[in-house]
Length: 170
View 1: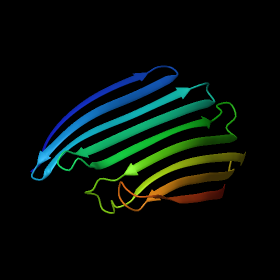
View 2: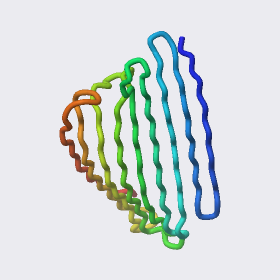
View 3: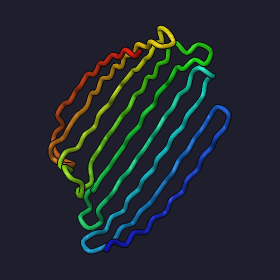
View 4: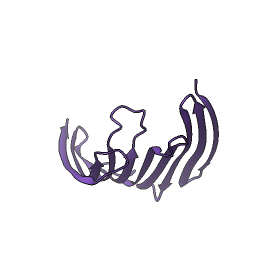
């Protein structure tokens, strides 16, 4: 049986142009063969520049340390920022651009936890309305990253992917 003590604090704001939410959590887990401290935070902000342009940002962080072994039991960093163009007066062209960074050291208890990864993704998506019934869309993305075979140790190996897709809707 695991005995968990958890404490959480959250704040938020919602105004005419800005929305913000943040949460911080502390966990202390104890049990047979287990003693771990975990810190987690989630943060999100949305800003409306105008009726047509919006931006969003997100930052999530989690860190778990095993007090028995002193090892990193898990760590996650995920950050992203994006901007969208969605015109109110003329809805013919809509697009979204987003950048994301991820560092993931999975918890030892998870399946396939023997690899670490860190990556960056840049993506762009656009939709153009030719007629009220006919849309053309395109999505482009590039992922540049690294993978480490030995959990929390060893060298990093490059990993890259490029994605492109088009769509026609009628």
